[in-house]
Image (cartoon, rainbow, N blue to C red; front, side, top):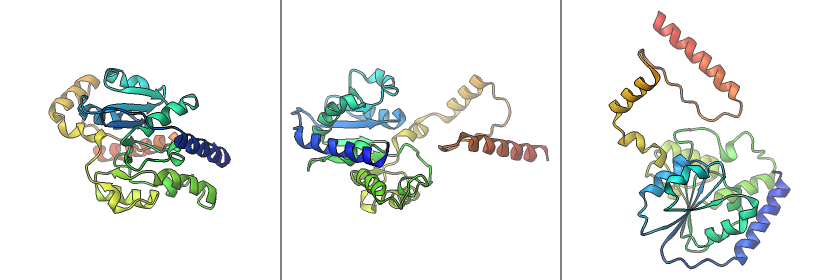
Length: 243
């Protein structure tokens, strides 16, 4: 989507968000914008169903992951056809929780009592993203302005460590006051699981009898980079255990 199309999209969202009035809901309303179920589902499950109204904006690809929670949440698929419905939901929310970059937020006008909180999908990935991503042409002022509009919509960031907060400050222009050092929902399961039980189950499932080397790569545009890294790691471990 080029800069002009994004600019028009932001204009449409801005007009709609001014025209649409918030719906009256009898309990606090939280809207989730979900790309990665691993980030959002733990939060939904932790909320008391009787105290909160919950709505999830997501893609048709991710919607099935919410099937087990269908009685607890309203799901709106994020398409251009449902744009008005999405904005209606956002307007009635006290809190909006996001897990990714959402273009819609660059044009959306928050109400005075709304807060947007971001939980990061790439937990532990200390890398260049946002305005430090090589794909962003920082010499294109219009492009940079559009990115900034989206980033500036966020009020708070869930982080797990100081290093993570530095990434947000450098890449998204965030400040220390916006950091919530609560940890990340998607990794909570690693602290609550019985490690020995999980290890035994995995060994049994995959027939693991020898020492195991685990390589967990972060996202890369070119998957060939991962393949090259795997070959290098295998060569390194082969050398270690044969010497």
